[in-house]
Length: 583
Image (cartoon, rainbow, N blue to C red; front, side, top):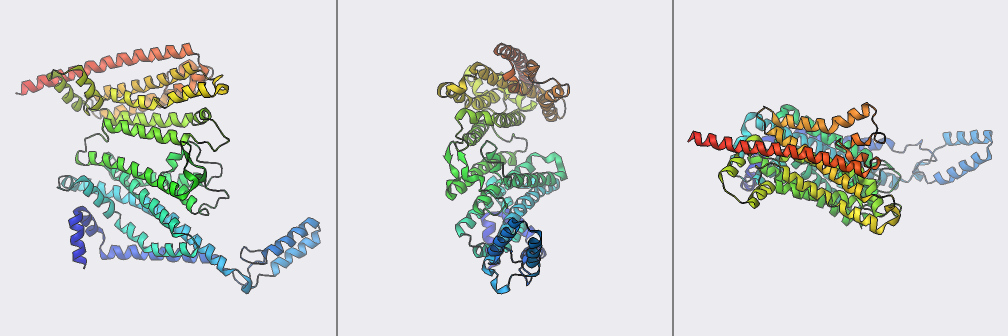
């Protein structure tokens, strides 16, 4: 039986068989099963600590006489007679609920629910944190031993190899969870929880595992310089994210009525709290019940909530898989191509704007929602675009190869632009400009609709200033992209680190210095217009001042691109001469 199963696994996925053989040994399996059983015993016995004994209070939650004595207690306290209050308190201290009166059925239902919810939380932390650590650690070990290159050269497809890693590396973690699943199901059914809700939880948990595990593999491939610190950094980041989001989800005031809702969808807590309202012990309905996406009421029923979670995890996992395929065979390749960057930016805009537009809160209008989410949208897009600058900017050798090809070939102007838009080895300036255009497009309906449909709000709405603010933001990002491309074209070692450090410095240092020197936005807005957050000073600046700042930034951008064009042309000529000399 076992040899046949092994042969079938090996025929289907040789990488999975390799991982399983290395991990599912008798001693490891015994430790995993024993750990799971011990954990189940501890959780079960811990819940029995509240078992009602013969000294159970008359006002306890499971005593049927509770309501009678609570009513009497209320009447006694209303009389304000200290002697009567003391006598009644002594009575409650010295008399206990009869054992035959305790509602044991309700007690067991509640405590089975506590067991079920406890395991629901344990499953999330165990699978996501431990699984992430094991996957990143496995890649680090493969890299240090040199076996990862042999795997890359194998005839298996990237999908087969990565699937084998995802299923095989955390196999012992899967075993720990699978041994606990029967008790989890038993607890759920004993707590009168519908199977449809339980299996919806399992579906979201599996989808989140695929997403986080795929991200862990990608992190392990692109951060080889961290060496042995990789698994701790990756799993620590996941632990911090899960812990932070569970605190936010349990907060009464933190609702899902802005663009931050998309980030919270990557943690399963809100969905679990939607399925099992007693999970976070908060006295309010789940925030997901009011969730909307472009005014579509997602939170109205379980099908739309679970379906949207699975769709979000599925699309994001698919995108990470495409990046994994690029990086696995060629570690020197960029994480995503220019074409994929356009799709990524468009997808992010749809998700962020979708959760920014919700109608349930105070009947707010379109422009009010945009104003409420302005800071979130600006920060998200700033981080996204700076990340794309780091990812898409090709290195010196790649640009030299492209420039040599351009220097040798007599091509039309159209083909040059096609190369700048699509070719991976061409400078990334045009690609960044296209991504900036995609980011700017959703702002145009806001500017138009505010003045047309909301005359009350448009009285204080200066469309010219808003358009100039968008243009100013685009120009500053383009300057950063050009600086980064110029740095990675230099001959200095560790050009990537220099580029990242320079962009990080020019992005964060000016606002910090201005705040440290006490140069406030409202007193000196002109200076802030040249920082990485120019939109923060727009409301304190005149349209003429903003336009002059925009012209100044355009001048700097033109000079930088002139220098970049010169460097690329010289790189192509020198590469061509070197090639001819070598012949």
